[in-house]
Amino acid sequence: MIVMKFGGSSVADAACMREVAALALEALPQAPLVVLSATAKTTDTLFEAARRAEDGDLDAAMALHRGLMERHRGIAGDLFPQGLPAELDAALAELGGELDLLLRGVALLRELSPRSMDAIASIGERLSTRILAAHLGAAWVDARTVVRTDDSFGCGRPQFKELAALAAERLAPLLGPGRVVVTQGYIGATARGLTTTLGRGGSDYSAALYGAALGAGDIQIWTDVEGVLTCDPRIVPEAQPIAELSFAEAAELAAFGAKVLHPATIQPAVEAGIPVTVRHTRRPHGRFTTITAEVVTGRPITALASRGPVTVLTVASANMLNQSGFLASLFQVFSRHKISVDLIATAEVSVSLTVDADAPLEALLEDLEQFATVGVARDRTIVAIVGERLKLTPGVTGRTFGALRDINVEMISMGANEINLSIVVRQEDAHPALRALHAALIEGSAS
Ligand code: ADP
Ligand code: ASP
Ligand code: MG
Image 1: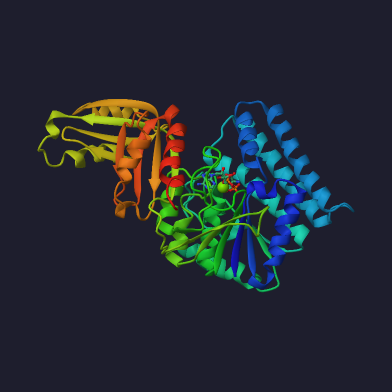
Image 2: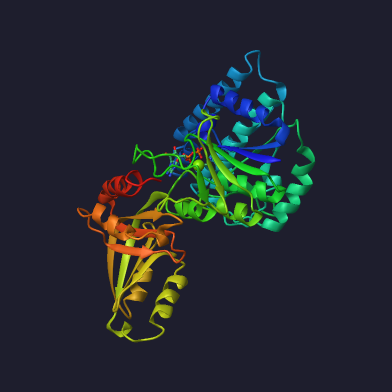
């Protein structure tokens, strides 16, 4: 079997739904499991409606609810000009009713827990999949009966063993050549049946989880670009699709901000040794990217990515000099405050680290200042240069800093796997830095 995951932009309207259906039908001999996102902007709208309800503005929340339901009924109406099948009509009405109750509940309590947010967010994928399954006359499976997660609402962690058993029991019997099965990305449920999500963009992760659990031959991520490109095309229009990418490169790119893949996607695929392909829904026979364990190319550098804003903390202490255990106690403080560190660079008497811009720093800083002085630099961006041959290619650092001669580089860190050279710049310098690096390292080389 294969997994075909379609993102929000691939199911924006009825025309898109038809294209998705045609691609699924084309893949019939391969026993496709279609994993669908919510339609474009729906998840954002659900978040917005939930926040309005939390603010007590039920009218605004209900207006968003109405707009959302009308849009979905509009798409369904286009696909079924003779009138909706009763089952679809009932399913849409039920989801509309559920969203209504959830929003009223939030507004009444003026309280929006991650648990309520997940229940509300799940409506998006449940709507889109109901419509596509009806259009295809395909089996519809509620992902919450398969994707078992823990109770970390908002970023549920999959329980791999249970998930594999549930997939074998509930999905495998439905799959086979000549049949399409449709299910949701992004959502799952706890052992108690409470709805969870895998975090924003999590449908890619769902696709990989299903693929690994079911032993798929291919995990296909269908989106609005011709694969993984050498940089985000919104920042660097010259970015080109990459035909072959290694799991390690793809994981680095995703972790450092290439939105085209959710950062967790690669891990289940790696473990199961299943290739992941990234393709353009509107140009199905165009170029695409294949991600596999080993890729042998001569290119020195594969792609660039960026993630921000981040905050750089520079921890300096005279005691650090020659004192063993300084780093251990430093990281204990971060661990105690549950703040995760991304990049690290050490010097003789100071350590620089990056943390998420929204990490709660007040209590952490208080503890750190007991034994060190701490500098805080906000609104920084990490720019990552990724390539399997980075470590083998002489002159990369020279070309990197040559390209960045007009930009102030505040921190440098080479990943331990030596396929990622990361630099930290001011947020306003990030786009110029990416464009300069792309021109010098990628356009300028025969990659
Ligand atoms: P979907 O809704 O299909 O999941 P996303 O919007 O999540 O799609 O991801 C696709 C988008 O990711 C592209 O439209 C592009 O703007 C952005 N993107 C960022 N970095 C890259 C990259 N290196 N290669 C391709 N796309 C990228
Ligand atoms: N619909 C979810 C989101 O917008 C999940 C996804 O599309 O991957 O975040
Ligand atoms: Mg996405």
